[in-house]
Length: 86
View 1 (spheres, rainbow, N blue to C red):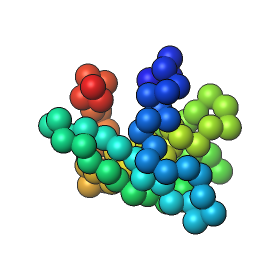
View 2 (view 1 turned 45 degrees about the vertical axis):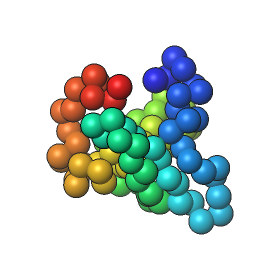
View 3 (view 1 turned 135 degrees about the vertical axis):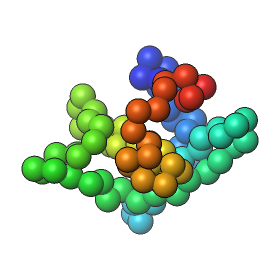
């Protein structure tokens, strides 16, 4: 995904906003599914507890949080195959 920034931008259904609420689009079994999350990211020792971006980007953590919400928990989201993202 990082090689195609337009695909990342296409996942976000709204722009950054003062409420810090994001709607992120996934396709589940071919059906468009919108998951809404806030920007509260679980941390450990002051850094994101799970995925980490290379820079100051927050999209990585937001997409992971939305996927975990779709799966029920971060634990359920663990170990997914990248081919599921297609």
